[in-house]
Image (cartoon, rainbow, N blue to C red; front, side, top):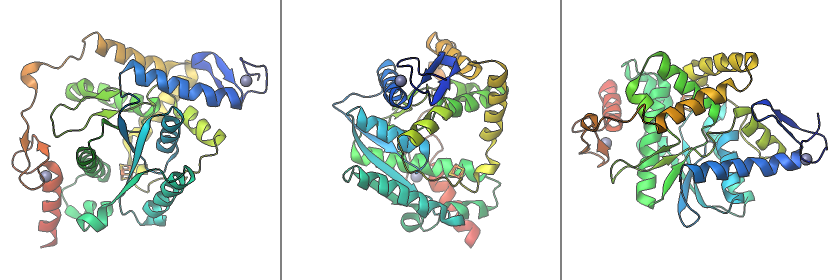
Amino acid sequence: MKCDQCGGVAVIGMPQHRLHLCAEHFLAWVPRMVERTIRRYQMFTHDECVLVAVSGGKDSLSLWEILIELGYQTEGLYINLGIAHEDYSDVSQRHVEAFAARHGGLPLRIVDVRREYGRGIPDLGKTGRGRRMCSACGLVKRHIMNRVAREGGYAAIATGHNLDDEAAVLLQNTLHWQGSYLRRQAPVLPASHPGLARKVKPLCHLYERETAAYALVKEISFVELECPYSVRATTIFYKELLNRLERHSRGAKQQFYLSFLKAREEGLFAPEPESAPELGECRACGQPTTAGELCAFCRLWQAMEEHDD
Ligand code: SF4
Ligand SMILES: [Zn+2]
Ligand SMILES: [Zn+2]
């Protein structure tokens, strides 16, 4: 396999782009793709500071690396979820800290859920409310990201979601015709309220195998352990289905996701104005909420306290 740009040895073939690239040209191609995505969806500019949510995994650390290379102003946020199995959370934190240190001491905020809120994510499974660990974990992460972004005044929170992540969620939502989720799934989630942060996904046009290859070729040291709860995550199942489709039909994943975005841009999923939920303020933490007096995050904590009594 030869690089289409220089004829050297290709390290990756990307059939959906009809492109083979050597290490050098691949490392130049990835940031160009990301820059194009940032501009296309007007995610942020070079004058703004972006909070990069990093988990210690290949996608989020690649994202941080690429944004630095592209000259954006960034700060990192690591949320230590308190997952003790195989020291998962602490090992991940060490990878993030090492990354920031290797880049000359990048600004990094660390929120330790157990230390700040008294319990870690594994405790959430004990409330007996049947809430799945990952949905509770997602709720906690969204709440903390929003809080930190609001306090720090960042232009946006950038997450490492790649095209496989987005296509898997899209497939899941489509199979269930989850209209409200489909309306909200986009590369940019605008701040719909002054207390809510803007969320952006600059890697959403890259396949997972491309972000993985980028991290390997760039020699980014990332956590290779999987979260012990990820085996229960349904998105893995949908990713496998899409990969089977991709093997059968080259570029099918990309086609599925990009056609959805195009349909969205053309107004297929435009929100109905009257359906926009009214936001109040949580009386405990002050964050915007549609859930009444207490936001979903504070209710989750309250449920745990009641469970202890
Ligand atoms: S797999 Fe689930 S529990 Fe683990 S970090 Fe992801 S969302 Fe949280
Ligand atoms: Zn080349
Ligand atoms: Zn609250």
